[in-house]
Image (tube, rainbow, N blue to C red):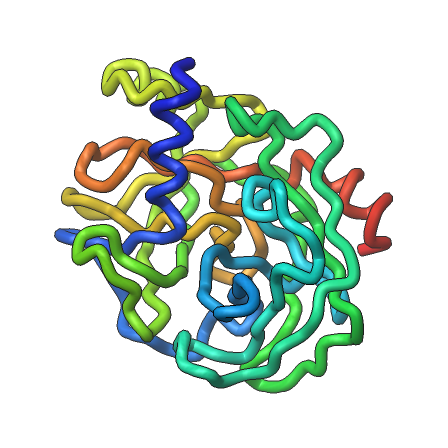
Length: 246
């Protein structure tokens, strides 16, 4: 893999939205999603997923090279305007085998300094009890758009469908994307033809009944019609439990 190309892709991919894709208007149906803010400016740079009253999942590359004091967690907001509740971060734990060049095992746990208060707009998403099959309908949410090179204020959502890893790998190879697909990944593509651009690192890929399927890792970029790649949460179920107790 060309590490430089992948690094450039990911650097552009805090999040992206959609063009020619099913995109949902902002709606209060992703209360398990959090925004990670870079301090001191409080700019959104990645998403995270609430899995307990004190633990969240995100992409490992989101916390790579950071300290706990350099980020905060905002929950309960569907906009990037100052809304919801902000929490300090007590610790984060990257998966031990995370490879920051090839983005293998791109998953991390993050613990807030104080318990997260749950309400109608803030809640835990259940973790999967089984693996996600190909062909499952899923929903991706996130902020920012590289189409317009700006950050929309409202959270955006898009319906996707999971695909087999072998098919995903073939598509990326044919597209010369330099993205590796590992057994611990799950891939998803848009249900409709067109460019999909929601690529918010750390964002949740959820089933239609709100079970966490994946955590956004990387994309080959908007407009290339290649499936986005997520860390497959079920593959890390044992590690998540051992670190967080969830």
